Length: 612
Image 1 (tube, helix red, strand yellow):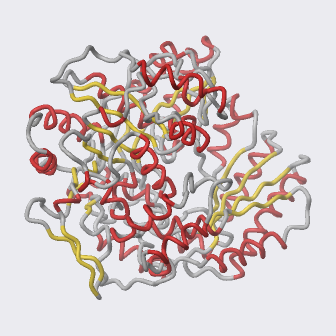
Image 2 (spheres, one colour):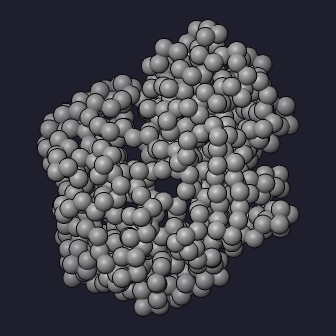
Image 3 (cartoon, helix red, strand yellow):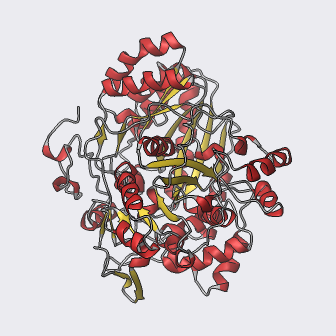
């Protein structure tokens, strides 16, 4: 069912905006909306960035299909309009609607945001406001949708907690069906009663039911309605876990334009800077047979000519060789290429990539992360000088001429020698290429380190804007060979990301102030303005450096301590201490259990079992 008054008014606007394909729909594969039924719970999945980014997120495809399969639910999607379309919607008094039917966001029963990146927070306010929904949870009435949010950002939720009615912590495949049942069964009850009912679902956090106090020892949480801490929901056995029967295929190009197949969740490598490696534990794999069946089904249903094996570290999949051998005849027959979005820094991964035709078209990307062995040991990267040499030799001997190297600057204990090590590795890569008689180019990308919650570095200070800029310029000045290029991430954006990565509920007013001053798409350099943010901090009497350049003590209560990811605080602190001692913690899949917290909570590795 369309909403003609919005659809008819929207189409003339498409000729006036950049990338009209973001709003036109015309996709292949979306299931038609179900027939009108007052008993249905109508969801809108909202992605706070532009269409081509949101459509590349595999989680959206999974949850969309899951909700379509539930008999008591229906679902549509919305993406954040670019600034030009936002202006036109406001000038024409049009509400932001779903891409399927143009149904305004305010007419859904529930609107759910995916939290992938801290610098998309102002886009959430844009979508709420354009969709006709009050910004703050406390301002919403009985007829307004329940606004919920999930994704990795939901595990450090406090900066946007006043805008969100409920957070889904962990696997949406578990929490969403329960939310559908609760929302269906509580139709006709008051908003407060419905939120209270949602809070009784394990893994659902309702901020309005939790009181926050700020003191010398940090942030404290209390509630008479919700049991604290709130546990992240986890699919214990990934074998047979829900996966779509079909995919939505866009009519225009998106960032990751391929069939995404999630082969496993979790990571046990234990990089101390990596939030994803902590919050997605434990490792749970699908079987090669199951993955093969998913690939065949989705290739035939979608028509895509590339399949991407999705995970935090695809080359760690224990059945990878079996899978590649089994699926190769089908892919060859259909003319479909296979890609691995992430490669380990070892010759095995390079040899593997060399056998995948689509990966030979461009350069290879590796992530040493730090320039010296000492600092790689501090962050527990597990990459040695020998790994680097073997990977680069394998890459150039297999015929690649371009290699991209990812590093971070501002890591704990970093020295000038560690920064020089970044240049040394780049120049060493160049010399290996020459020795292999290749005309090579080395691209170096350096990001500022942001300490994240739920990681061993959550207590560490973050480098200031000036420190990061000086380090970036120092690195640029070390490059004298035209075959080596170096780019570093804007320190202003890194600074703001750091504020919200470890922020508390007091930042909500700052987000609103910056948004009202025009902050939009803060993760995009062409629209980012730090001055707006400094003005918003000053307006609300908030010192942003309190959240970034300040070292935290072990005893401080942190703004995410009421969220239980399954990994214990004691383990994170022990890993922090190991970092100080430059002591490696080996991957528990190949060594022994390190007692991260999952050993008594469903981790198959700690029990000596096989996932396959």
